[in-house]
Length: 123
Image 1 (cartoon, helix red, strand yellow):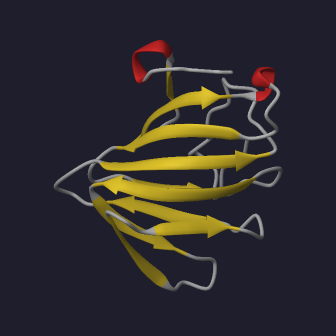
Image 2: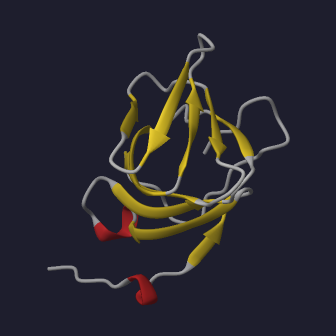
């Protein structure tokens, strides 16, 4: 059994926020669970070419823009899933951080960070 508290995991600075990775590849579960903070007022161009991701908003608000340019509001209680390695933009509200619980498959090694200098980043 694996039991971890937020105080047990390290913060990984990923460019526009923090990712606290509760499960990683070394845990042998086949997926990663994170508690992710997206800083207020930031826009992140993202794409995971090797991972699928689902995000559930537990605090804050923002918008995710899909590759077709459609905007989807994110508020507490909203889930979005990137089921096709979708390029997307994640925008946090200018007034508050966005907090997401995210699941990645396959599992992250644990120290990956986004490259926000390119059009779309990847792990």
